[in-house]
Image (cartoon, rainbow, N blue to C red):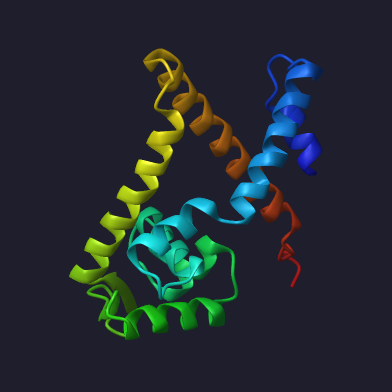
Length: 178
């Protein structure tokens, strides 16, 4: 199944070409900003100049992982090689931002946990990011902002779902005949 066919499956009413073009152009502009990681770089410059953007990514995905957080789960959520995930976690452990704990379910497994310093650092970084977003959105009427936040969440969630589905469709399938 292709991404194109996945897109067609979920379409109730086809959006206008004008709307799609405007969104596409706007996403292109946003991609340039996101590609430069403006929000993350601003947070790092203000809070933790020694960190890298990928360190922020680790802290962010740890918030979203359900269940035990392991290096493997972090790497999978970030869509990076496990060895890269391991190096990032090791660096954050060395900086006192994360620590490794034994799993209560399986003592052989190593869990990754934020330290108290890591929690406070994450809270400060979030505050800087939210402050920047608040400045961008400060003159929006409340009803428009509320609608945008709901629609933007829906939009991004659909992209994530399409990506995951397309990614799984490309994975080699194990046959029952083996």
